Image (cartoon, rainbow, N blue to C red; front, side):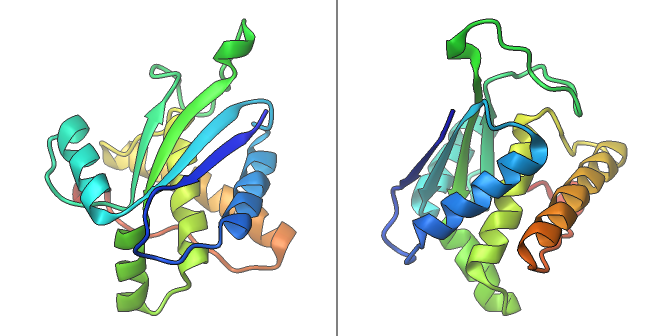
Length: 168
């Protein structure tokens, strides 16, 4: 199964091969290689439109996830019966939004895109952050994923520390 990676924005130069490799590493860590996954990179205008349509928030954001399995419980893997059910869903990355954050905080764009993608994948796997308890559970999962990623790659990525009340 594979990753469909589309870059629909032209604002930020993006190294797709690096992002694809990072996504493949995250999929390996999570044991989700048999599932298809869509990653769509968009600019502020597009992510704001999507955020407004689906979340009624008329602002750009870093990531929006659209899970194939909407009722999946955190920590549980989907059990597809048919080939066309081997899909986790789609993640929209607000690359322009992320780039602005990186410039403000002097962070590496591709590192932050990997962290944000890990966050998005957690959403596809049933994790939420509507409450402090859910936020803690999701943050623990992201921390584990990124610690394994760092072990495998020699990098030093950490979860972005936003509280659930700020709603990513």
